[in-house]
Image 1: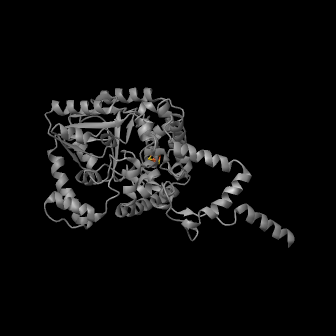
Image 2: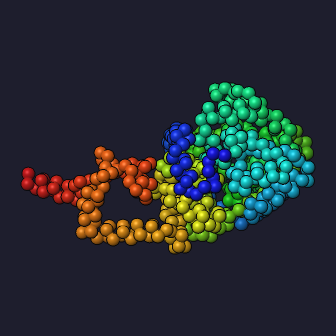
Image 3: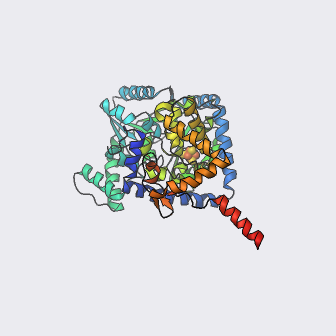
Length: 475
Ligand code: SF4
């Protein structure tokens, strides 16, 4: 693994900033995704009205989650499926293993599931002698690379085609060319065999419809369909907040999700699955097991400051516009969930601001994420609230305390402010390169080495303004 996931946040950032090919790949892909989203949103007419509808539906569900979860679970059971509640990651693994053992299964074919990443299911299965096969192309790539996803919609966004060809060649034991048809052909042939031989299929769940007990899978590759129909047993891992009340609400969120994620009107495959196969049906699994996962989500429920984050429909739009994510990529966050939403939910899901409390600082607070979010989560505000909470918990460094004290001292008084600006101009001179700064000692180098740091102007704005005013009076 080449991502230093176990290193501290600063080291991961440093590593990411030196990874030129990763940064180029991410910049290119996120720019395309962002532009596609803007175009798709424009075609919808009043996009903000749609966002408001998405927000209302998701807020209503989260406020009444106990009711809708029960309704959903009752309807799954009525359709012949089995339902489990898993509080923690270990509980998810335990339930999956019980099902695996009941069927003496040896292989589990998976379609994309962020929950399985969250609970590190592949490793748990591997440790118990079970082969987990990722069948989503991007997930397959990062499985071969032994890396976690670096984007929730495009997990291998950081890889270019040559790196993918290297991984496939190693797996194939012969050279695979880096052109798209060759890469596709290899993945298709390898994965088809796995679909046909897997004992169990495991999928995530984009949405769960309470009124019918159905689960909805949204994908572009059709692998979700294969995984949920070919093996005899289908396991669904579902975050407990994935619910929508009914089909009418599903229509609204299905209009928002693909447009926000990739700019598509609809993804190539939208599958709605209601229970296992019923007598007389030609295909489908004999058993369907739905595992409803908490894994820290109840930490956010009832938290007036943070409950809003549960509205997230995992579209990834906030990643694509975030100036920080676009520079450091997903692995630097050290969590399965990167980007602005990852910086918000990771400390909350883990209930740990000591070890994850630096993530909310991975933001310029420009609010581009909040503006892009199809369910109007005020991400930048939540990041500020988390920073404050971290400060209150006493986890901020003495250096940060000192910096803010100095800031308040000079910026809280006009005379001192003017003095600081004037002396700042002279003090910065050794570092000035044109109209910006370069180099400098720590902690300043944290800015100047990788970001554009504008120099303090020789003539402060106030002085220029006074002179302009004076000039126009004299004319
Ligand atoms: S926070 Fe909003 S923009 Fe980001 S992934 Fe979730 S729904 Fe999409």
